[in-house]
Image 1 (tube, rainbow, N blue to C red):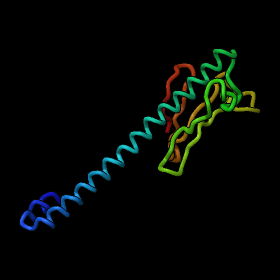
Image 2 (image 1 turned 45 degrees about the horizontal axis):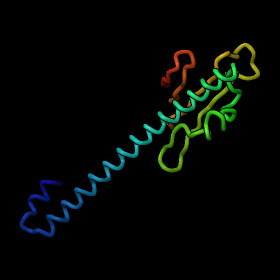
Image 3 (image 1 turned 45 degrees about the vertical axis):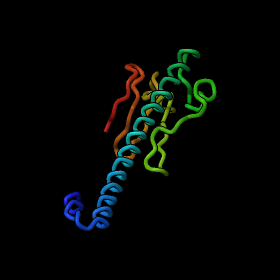
Image 4 (image 1 turned 60 degrees about the vertical axis):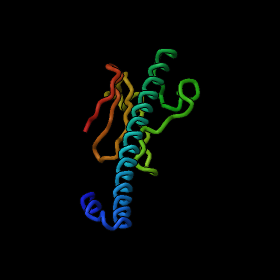
Length: 137
């Protein structure tokens, strides 16, 4: 496309139109990459805020919360979304403590905190022992 624009140097109007098209495509690519990058930054910030709030709750109250809503308003102003996909799809955090309620043999002393990333099998989990996030697919 750049070569076609340069070849049209004799026809100034055509050349300007082609360079304008190139500029629009370039800006669209930059905008798309920026939206994905900012979404990734927001996702990492939100997941760390939630994990830190659960850890702070445990430290202050000597136990994990039964549900994330117990973190509001003392530890978080509101439960953030885990991840946003586009403008309309929001993925929430999933939290359970004990990890499998109602089944004593599967009950853990450590809660389950994770969120889905939009794919059918990809989940991001928080390990309360190592205090790190990892991907499980």
